[in-house]
Image 1: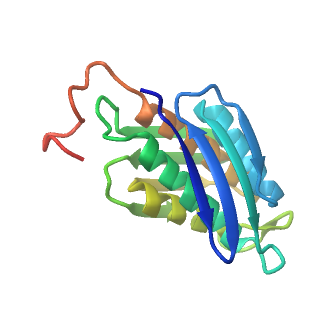
Image 2: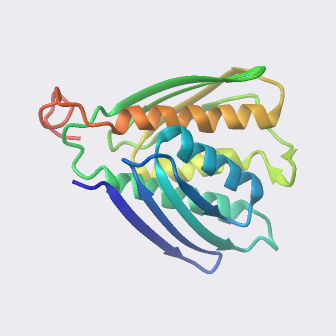
Length: 195
């Protein structure tokens, strides 16, 4: 079964069209109007081996908040729909990725229960024109619309660009592992028999 979906979201703040193929090769075409977000989504697709296309326009004359959050929402909806009934899927994913002086740990569970824990040095500031607190907003959107339990832990790091890049790469690798089909899994990976 091909695990590929298209998501369209239109509000008074954003218009987004997103296509995701979980079983891809890492190809991407990203245009959100937010340069740093484009960069993060491109490397997310590459390191997760996801084929991802995002075409987004938003009220950037206000700021990037709505665009970043809504792209996270659409990506979460895409993963939720693409994994379908989760039969045969590994479900859990963990990854640690270094980016020079920064280290990011990601643990996630595609269990249908949204929960987000974010322990990082990121507080306030910018990477170029990108407000770093929008990283948390992106992942809130993803978690709430994918039903994922997600823990992000960055024990150390000083360069904001390095920290955020390590997070997105580690997130991609953890999702890649969690969404893989494993022939040893009969039904869904739960003693309850359902997720």
